[in-house]
Image (cartoon, rainbow, N blue to C red):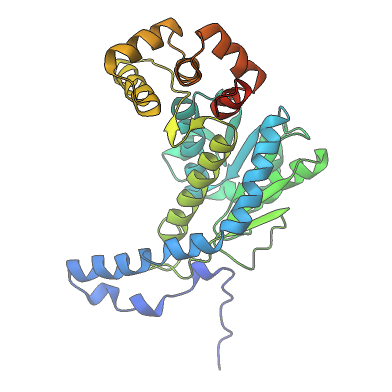
Length: 301
């Protein structure tokens, strides 16, 4: 009697014919097979950029409207959300409560597998109970069908908050407002979504949050200008950034940064516009802290 085929719900769970003999290869052969699969990830991410642009615009609208960006996911996907959210405050000087990561199973799931929690839609609803209408909820699910994320989306819809799904499954059953899919296909090891799907999610998340911060004016050119000098390394970085932005020498930059009370954006604006720090600070305040806008405000763009 012929056995019925087992239904595979996501491309990431399918067997990859290119790596079917991976266990027969020597060590270097194994690495080459995995690397060949990894080389396809950037193209899959590139194809998802138009959708990601819509997600970025939603993120900017949420933050400008006083809302927050919530990441919700389980397993490897959720852990990537935790890492991305944790890196926003030190990198861009952004308040730590504006990017909020929700990992199924909580903090313990960051370092240990808690496999059953991803099947709980009620946990997703409970964890996202604090979502408000101005917020954005970004679901992270390689399979596109994680119940925990479904529950998070239910909580978002209940208050009218928009939703985004970052997935590797073009046929995702979750129904967000914006579907961001990097179709990475079958993994080198079937179902191991910490591999290509995880790499794609990391790329999409970091690209998303970086683009949001750029659109929020947290950079000048490609320089980080909202750095908080909490140690010697960061104080040195601020001086280097000021020199890069203005072309001034070390002594002039030190003096300008001191006059600006250590505020890098005030120092940049002051030096480039040729105004004193109080005038630069007023211009930045009038322009939501965006250096280029402040320079235009001062007639020096």
